[in-house]
Length: 247
Image: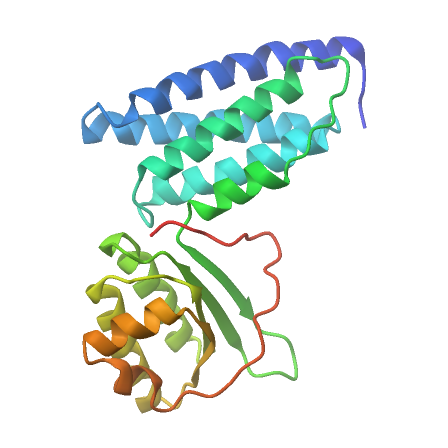
């Protein structure tokens, strides 16, 4: 990989300009009209895409990994499958701060721990989804749901579950950290389970948060949700996709 001093300095200047612009846009985001919000998401996505691509070319793996994580979140906001929440803004600002600390010392290479900031960025995205279409195995879709206390996740969750049905994938639902969930989310899962059974698609629970069970019980949905449950092993880790925390 290229580690030329001049190349690194050129990258440093351009990347820091991108970071400053994205940071200012995110701080502005919640105060501006929808049209401007869409522009902010699009321009921020492009800026982080540029940082990711350039850092990959010159061998800055930490910068590449972090900018890719932020880019993915912005891409889902850009496509409309995810709604912006304050927690996302905080996670993105934290990511920009770490990016700046990685890039400012160039051409000296900094090595900072990224696990914490990557976890925060991932946690601000609602669903963890992994599909398994391996030969010799029945296709599966693992869906992990966290903190589903608002209707914000229903569009994305509905899309994921519809795709699972269309692909005849069995579905493993992990709500071990879902907490107290919105009625609309529970109703959506109930409707999906009924539809899945009519199409011979198996739905299993890998793990459940007691708060999730309590919500289902209070709403009278526990019988439909859990009547045919079957124990399943924990979902495999998702390659390239982290758990997502805020719904």
